[in-house]
View: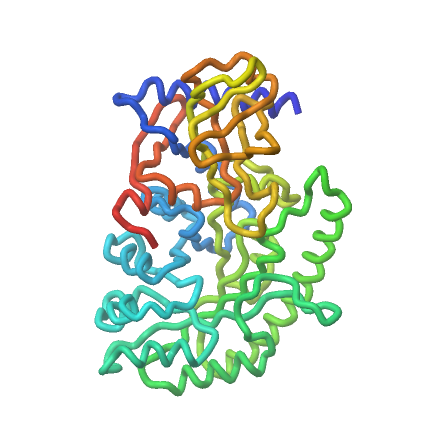
Length: 405
């Protein structure tokens, strides 16, 4: 605990110095990424992958310069995109020549652009889980001269006691259903089956070592173990069936919270990772790795409602997902600050209490962490990349490039 407080105070000193030494005043909220932590996290993900290639999940970054930085690491290869327009933009910017869609797309305008560009079609792989997705593609093209690369998204949830545990994504679970769709793709002109995805979100995206939730964490770890065992068997069966239908270029799986178990499956050829590079609040409590938070935002103290409370400007960036305490931003540095129960984190102001509130001055910066990775940068145009105690570079987010994917 003491070491954590020391680290957070040192972080505050570094980030405050970086803002103070900036050549021009930094607009607040000041969005920063600690490159030292980012690079260390990339190295740790590579270690955990044990040689299995990592595909960077763009949804968890949303900053072109950070995507490029991750792809420059030997362990990372290719992008897992979340929007087809985003994938087309990444291709146009030459950020990657290997982009797999993490989700299906029915964006007819973006699909039209894809099917009319041999270059984009050779770079981007669409994700599907139904023939209806193929129908949409065919409905917007007059020629099938350009072959469209597709991958099948297979449900990777745990089936236990008649219940489904995991993200509600693909309807494809049984081997026969997957094989039927694969045969349809192979037989359908204008499409090429190149890959498979099995995202085990109930393993990759759920904390399993929360100090205040010991009993729940134990249950989560048991669910994860059962899921890994069941999925390994299912992947093997599906792989055997697909090998009789078409050669695959890749089998994508997992996420930052499941790198080891996903990479250990002999069927898996690559593991997706993104949140593990920035380590937002929801990734603090995993048994599989030590968190190194890398993304922060700073807001100034505006006023002091009482001797034991300060109010900062804005800061209310609440994460998506089920509403709850784990989705609100975390006052991080100086350590010891807390949100109030009645107001929480607000759009234009956020009151804070705790021992540091008694000594903070008007104009001081309070540093927060977001609960999820990537979503934070939808709220800014510029992200400051900090090395040591200086801003090494100020770069645009997706929004800063004029895009809203």
